Structures are given as C-alpha cells and as structure tokens.
Amino acid sequence: MGPARVYVAAFPVRLSPPPRSSAPLLLYSSAMDPSLRETLRRHDGFSGTVRAFFRDRGYVEVETPVLSPFLIPEPAIEVFQAQYVPGRGSPRPLWLAPSPELWMKRLLAAGSGDIFQISRSFRNGDYGGPHHNPEFRLLEWYTVGCGYLQSIDVTEELFRRMIAEGQAARPEAELAPPFARLTMEEAFRELAHIDLARCQEPGQLIDEARRAGLDVRDSPTWEQAFHLLFLTLVEPELPRDRPLVLLDYPAQVPTTARRKAGTPWSERWELFVDGVEVANVYTEETDAATLRALVAEEAGRRAGCRTQHAVDAGFADVFPKDFPPCTGAALGMDRLEMVFSGLPSLQGVILFPFSAILGAQSADRE
Image 1 (cartoon, rainbow, N blue to C red):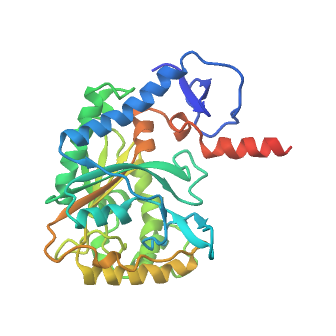
Image 2 (cartoon, rainbow, N blue to C red):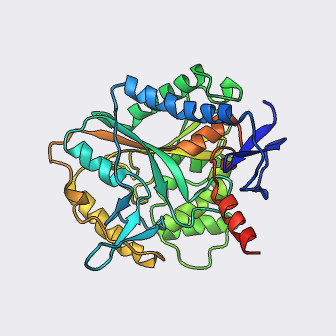
C-alpha cells in the first residue's frame, strides 16, 4: 500500500505513513488535484458495492427522516437539537436522529420485509478520537425470519463481496471470513480472569474491579462496573488477527435485543476489526410489554444527559403480536471503509472531518 491520501474538503494532503492522530490540515486551497475524481470514484464504489450486495439478496433500500419530533431514549448518546420555525405559531423542537432505527422499525412492522439504508446519523460529543465524528454514515439493515446468529453469515458474505470486488486495500487474510467468534463470557474469563456469569450483583463486579487494581471510588451500577472492566481489561486484549464476533452481551446492559432464554445474556453481537467496533447486531425484541418497560427505564436514565428530547411514546407498540423473529444490524460505514483501506483514522475516509471544520473556523477568527 502506497502513501495514504487524506482528504479534507476534497483537497488531498499526502501522508506517509498514515497519521495516528489528527494533524492540522488545510480546509481551503486554490490548488487542483488531478487524482481527486479517481479518489471520489473509489469512495463512491465502496458504497455502491454495499448497496448492490443487499439489493442482490432481495433487500429494499429505504430513506427515513433525519429530523424527528421524538427519539428512542438512549442515555449513552447525546443528541443534537434543532428547531422548526413555522410561518405562524410557535417554534417546535426537533432532534437529529442518532440512527434510522426509529423509522425503519415502523416500516418493518407495517410489512416492508427485508430493508436496508445508508443514513446520515448524528451523535453529539462523539468526537475526539480517530474513530469518531459527530456526523457519520450508518448502514442499517433488518432481516425478517432471521436470528442474530444467521446475521453473522450475512455479514461474512458482505465482506466476501467487498473483497471479491477489490474494495480491500490490505491483505485479504486480515479481513476474509470466517470471522473468529468469542462469547462475552469467554472473553471475560480468558482475558480478564473473571467469571461474568457468577458476578450478577453490582458488588461482585466492583470487587473484581478492585482486585484488578482499577480505581472504583463511587458505587457504580452493575452496567457501569461491566463497562469499566470491559473497556479496561477486555477490549484492548481482543484478538486482532482477523475480524472478531463478540457474542452474547449481558442482558443487564439495556438494549432492544431479545434476551437469550434461561441465561443472563442477550441475543446480541458486535463485530471488531483491528480492535475497532464496526457493527452492532440484535435479534430484535418485539414484545410490547418488554419494550414499554425498557423505554420507561431508559427515559428515566436520560435525565442526566445534557440535551433532553421528547420520547417516542408509540415505539413499544409498533410490532403486531404475531410478528416473526427478525434481526437488526447497524454498521458504521465510515469505519468499515477505514478498516478496509487499512487506515487508522476516519480522516482518510470522511471528506470533511469535523476536526478540520472546527480548525478552519478557529483559524478564520484569528
């Protein structure tokens, strides 16, 4: 692989080797680059291959709103607030969607069948590292009559297609399926020497964190203690020689994933490539009572967020009682393109990264 070409506002800066942190880059330039169009074609071709893959499998591409009068409560996500100003009457608050899930599930419940979308999604404060940008592309797809384990097969086929059509700028063996598989229980046992299944009380996980020498001054919840242990002891040690599916997340971490019957786990997996989380996949919970309880709990927890939003009161009742099992998958398109390109930063993928836009604004004020 030759020198990386990092594009900011469509003007290239040659870097060799690729930068491991954000560097000052020019947002404006009068110079023209003859290779720009080819670079844009490669970028466009990456998305085109993804779209062709899903269409060939019978999925229908959809478009859903970015501006919404309500959202699903997700305490871990800060959102952007906007405002609708009508010609008459009072302004109304709106929010930029952090994912298209809210609307895609309405289509799904109404009988859309298998659908996919590459959306613009927004998460406030999601900036500061090489793998984050507040505005990003999210590939989301839903498969009716499919469980979360079957979605691994779909994702592996997507990777095979991308490799076969020349979308990988790195050795094929580093990306090619079959993916490695590891359950969360195995990961904690093998990498952190913690029996997660036997530590279902907050105090037990806190004791494990202290035994590992972690600073636990407050009294975290079970979920907080889990994330502390995972991010500190487990995630940095995950195998990186090929893509890894990390299976069966704890059910005590609230999500819309269906619980795995008779276990403390949920039917959820995440895909890691080079240690970077690329995809998040569930067997979707469709039971109204279960979803109603989840929405109420999460809405209460959002009280600590800096930007409050209206909650979608009808979300829990979207699915009919006889709705078949289905899987939902959310995959970061920018991250996928980044790892397929062998780059360490989204600055090699996003044409107008947030860091450069803010940097140019600061420079203009000086």
